[in-house]
Length: 116
Length: 111
Image (cartoon, rainbow over all chains, first blue to last red; front, top):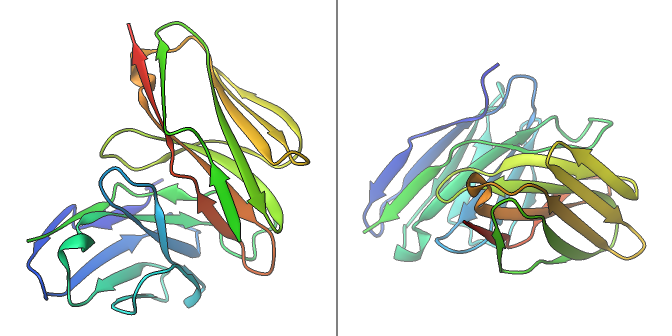
């Protein structure tokens, strides 16, 4: 069974540009989470989607946005890129909000975004 | 909201035992997870605790005390490959489940 897949692996952009990151969850998972991990820092929660809806949002500016598609895959968009957006962006998936047991999050390998 | 504390760094010797502590404060507790993250890689799931007590999984064990807001991850027979960051994460109960990660404990295993 395939795990969480993210693309691209690496992305290089310049200040002011837009970046689009993609994530495909584990088959059967309806929840997708996005995290930012800057070098040497912990996981910072960005967004949580479940069943196509945004369920929660971390403390990030509105230029960080995303969406979840009917097949539960997800996109993270970062507009007007700034140098400090350089980080590893991790996507995780879980069974979703309706699951009756604890939702374990499984992570993809991440997209390393470099803003020059 | 939630607050999670764990030591920033630890060093231990190959073959030894190490205990990584995690304390948390939450308005509604649903469960606690431990993840391992090697440098530059994605976190991988190690264990979870919902009820008080010890959960053992091979060389790794995790303990939870809900009344004390406390957990630890115990690693036995340390190997060099265990050098990694260990993340404590707490799931908050409520209509929408929310998981908050601690900053992680960077463990260095030395010969």
